[in-house]
Amino acid sequence: MIRRWALLFPILLAGCADSTLLHEILPTPPPPVVAQTRAKHTEEFVVKEIVRSRADILWVIDNSGSMGSHQQDVIDNTSVFIQGFTQNASGADWKMGLISTDDEDAPYLGFVPGDEMNASTPNNIARFQAAVRRLGVNGNGEERLYDPLIDHLNRHPTFLRTGAMFFLIVVSDEEEQSRQFTTLQFIANVRSRVPGPDRWVTYGVLGDTAHTCGSLDYRGSRYEDFILQTLGKMFLICSDFGTSLAEIALDMGSRMEAPKLDLQNRPILSSLKVYYLDRLLPGGP
Image (cartoon, rainbow, N blue to C red; front, side, top):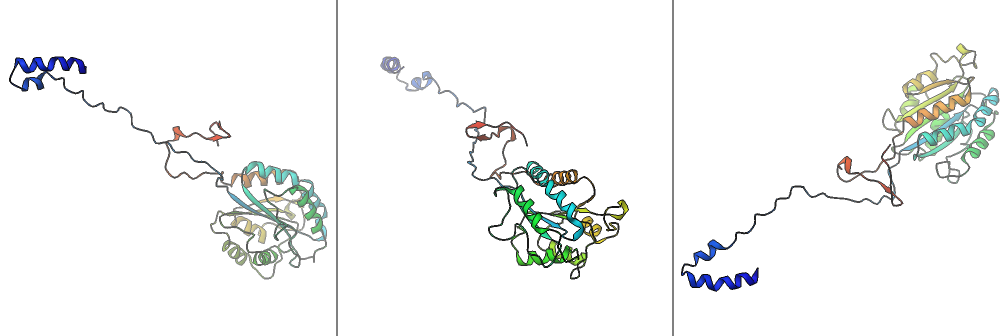
């Protein structure tokens, strides 16, 4: 193109004194190309840790003389509960503790450094079974939930973690006999440590005289009152223990939030891709 104009340029100048002719015969530049698609902004997040939901699980097991067979039921079905919960609450950051209904007993598991039981500790099933055996049936004969629980939480204020779900599992064949706290006082005390009415759920594995199961008259009892107020459920202590613990584990898992990753911006859902070890993962929960 340069050579062609180099030849034409002197001829044009010679043929016409009006320099406007040069402008008329020069080709006009092409119009700018308008982009038909907008640019896409891609962000890549290297995830070292996702946001996992938390669960603080506390077992309170009656240690009176009538509880021997029921404690053995707990021991025999520990794996049903722990495996069921960890599967239903996959990826959750959980911890577990065990206390008795005797307000003179120290915690049996999960409260002091070196005795933690959580998703990272080994041999959890065997450790929990051993703790229930140590708890035994040599209590003082007064089955109390409210008083010892508040005492342990006061002594170990870090057991309940901020933002965690609190799951309380009570196993007893007798009425709650605390003297220091009424049901309303007990609930108010625990709620001050567990913000949010939906963050505390109680499961009672209890006796009920209406079902010839223990000496507890569940209807109108303290247990019925506070279990209802903490969005909980009651299971008969004389029913199949494995089935009851499996149902509790399933219900607990359903109340947990799925693990999540907080993005900095709202994404176009169809554009999301998740890779792990350089492999694209299929979409799903």
